[in-house]
Image 1: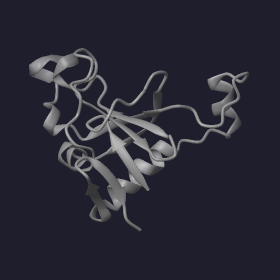
Image 2: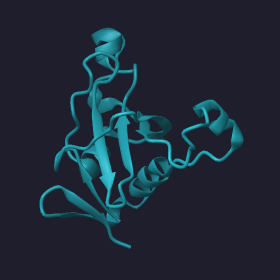
Image 3: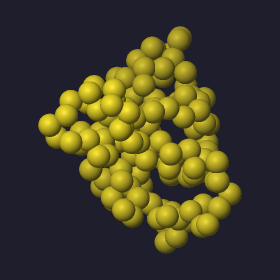
Length: 138
Protein backbone atom coordinates (compact mmCIF):
# COMPACT_ATOMS: atom_id res chain seq x y z
CA UNK A 1 0.00 0.00 0.00
CA UNK A 2 1.39 3.40 -0.96
CA UNK A 3 2.10 6.13 1.55
CA UNK A 4 3.57 9.62 1.60
CA UNK A 5 5.38 11.54 4.31
CA UNK A 6 5.68 15.14 5.42
CA UNK A 7 8.72 15.30 3.11
CA UNK A 8 6.38 14.90 0.10
CA UNK A 9 3.56 17.27 1.00
CA UNK A 10 1.77 18.83 3.95
CA UNK A 11 -0.16 16.22 5.95
CA UNK A 12 -2.94 17.35 8.26
CA UNK A 13 -2.32 15.79 11.67
CA UNK A 14 -4.73 18.08 13.51
CA UNK A 15 -6.58 16.23 16.31
CA UNK A 16 -4.31 13.18 16.17
CA UNK A 17 -3.34 11.68 19.50
CA UNK A 18 -1.60 8.70 21.05
CA UNK A 19 -2.61 5.31 19.62
CA UNK A 20 0.27 3.03 20.62
CA UNK A 21 4.02 2.54 20.77
CA UNK A 22 6.82 0.99 18.79
CA UNK A 23 10.42 0.12 19.64
CA UNK A 24 12.65 0.81 16.66
CA UNK A 25 15.82 2.70 15.83
CA UNK A 26 15.86 6.27 14.62
CA UNK A 27 17.89 5.13 11.61
CA UNK A 28 15.21 2.67 10.47
CA UNK A 29 12.47 5.30 10.84
CA UNK A 30 14.57 7.72 8.77
CA UNK A 31 15.04 5.03 6.13
CA UNK A 32 11.31 4.26 5.94
CA UNK A 33 9.95 7.81 6.31
CA UNK A 34 12.78 10.24 5.51
CA UNK A 35 14.09 12.93 7.81
CA UNK A 36 11.75 13.91 10.66
CA UNK A 37 10.37 17.30 11.61
CA UNK A 38 12.11 18.86 14.61
CA UNK A 39 9.14 18.38 16.95
CA UNK A 40 7.73 21.06 19.20
CA UNK A 41 10.99 22.10 20.86
CA UNK A 42 9.67 21.04 24.26
CA UNK A 43 8.28 17.52 24.75
CA UNK A 44 9.01 16.19 21.25
CA UNK A 45 12.43 16.13 19.56
CA UNK A 46 11.49 14.41 16.28
CA UNK A 47 8.24 13.64 14.46
CA UNK A 48 7.29 11.90 11.24
CA UNK A 49 3.92 12.38 9.52
CA UNK A 50 2.61 9.62 7.27
CA UNK A 51 -0.52 9.31 5.14
CA UNK A 52 -1.59 6.17 3.29
CA UNK A 53 -3.46 6.21 0.00
CA UNK A 54 -6.73 5.40 1.80
CA UNK A 55 -6.46 8.57 3.94
CA UNK A 56 -5.30 6.99 7.21
CA UNK A 57 -2.85 9.36 8.92
CA UNK A 58 -0.18 8.52 11.50
CA UNK A 59 2.49 10.35 13.41
CA UNK A 60 5.59 8.85 14.98
CA UNK A 61 7.23 10.88 17.72
CA UNK A 62 9.25 10.67 20.89
CA UNK A 63 7.63 12.09 24.01
CA UNK A 64 9.41 13.47 27.06
CA UNK A 65 12.47 11.24 26.71
CA UNK A 66 14.72 13.45 24.60
CA UNK A 67 17.04 16.34 25.20
CA UNK A 68 14.35 18.98 24.58
CA UNK A 69 12.42 17.93 27.67
CA UNK A 70 15.08 16.38 29.92
CA UNK A 71 18.08 18.49 28.96
CA UNK A 72 21.49 17.36 27.76
CA UNK A 73 22.40 15.50 30.97
CA UNK A 74 19.40 13.17 31.16
CA UNK A 75 17.78 13.36 27.72
CA UNK A 76 18.43 10.78 25.05
CA UNK A 77 20.00 12.20 21.86
CA UNK A 78 17.42 11.94 19.06
CA UNK A 79 19.50 9.50 16.99
CA UNK A 80 19.65 7.10 19.97
CA UNK A 81 15.95 7.08 20.86
CA UNK A 82 14.33 3.66 20.38
CA UNK A 83 10.94 4.13 22.08
CA UNK A 84 8.48 6.02 19.89
CA UNK A 85 4.80 6.88 20.18
CA UNK A 86 2.37 6.42 17.31
CA UNK A 87 -0.44 8.91 16.94
CA UNK A 88 -3.46 9.08 14.70
CA UNK A 89 -7.16 9.76 14.44
CA UNK A 90 -9.70 7.50 16.10
CA UNK A 91 -11.14 5.26 13.40
CA UNK A 92 -14.77 4.22 13.86
CA UNK A 93 -15.55 6.10 17.09
CA UNK A 94 -19.03 7.63 16.99
CA UNK A 95 -18.91 11.38 17.62
CA UNK A 96 -21.40 10.92 20.46
CA UNK A 97 -19.17 8.43 22.31
CA UNK A 98 -16.41 9.65 24.60
CA UNK A 99 -12.88 8.43 23.93
CA UNK A 100 -12.78 6.63 27.29
CA UNK A 101 -16.09 4.83 26.69
CA UNK A 102 -14.89 3.85 23.21
CA UNK A 103 -11.67 2.38 24.65
CA UNK A 104 -13.62 0.49 27.33
CA UNK A 105 -16.04 -0.92 24.74
CA UNK A 106 -13.26 -2.85 23.01
CA UNK A 107 -14.32 -1.44 19.64
CA UNK A 108 -11.26 0.78 19.36
CA UNK A 109 -9.27 0.23 16.19
CA UNK A 110 -5.80 1.60 15.50
CA UNK A 111 -4.70 0.78 11.95
CA UNK A 112 -1.85 3.26 12.32
CA UNK A 113 -0.08 1.03 14.84
CA UNK A 114 -0.60 -2.11 12.77
CA UNK A 115 0.63 -0.43 9.59
CA UNK A 116 3.76 1.05 11.20
CA UNK A 117 4.60 -2.30 12.80
CA UNK A 118 4.05 -4.05 9.46
CA UNK A 119 6.34 -1.62 7.63
CA UNK A 120 9.06 -2.15 10.22
CA UNK A 121 8.69 -5.92 10.08
CA UNK A 122 8.71 -5.94 6.26
CA UNK A 123 11.21 -3.15 5.71
CA UNK A 124 13.00 -5.11 3.00
CA UNK A 125 10.01 -4.82 0.63
CA UNK A 126 9.47 -1.06 0.95
CA UNK A 127 10.51 0.83 -2.16
CA UNK A 128 10.85 4.52 -2.94
CA UNK A 129 8.87 5.82 -5.89
CA UNK A 130 9.51 9.26 -7.43
CA UNK A 131 11.55 10.71 -4.61
CA UNK A 132 9.85 10.22 -1.27
CA UNK A 133 6.61 8.43 -2.15
CA UNK A 134 6.77 4.93 -0.74
CA UNK A 135 5.12 1.64 -1.44
CA UNK A 136 5.11 -1.68 0.35
CA UNK A 137 5.38 -4.29 -2.37
CA UNK A 138 3.58 -7.51 -1.49
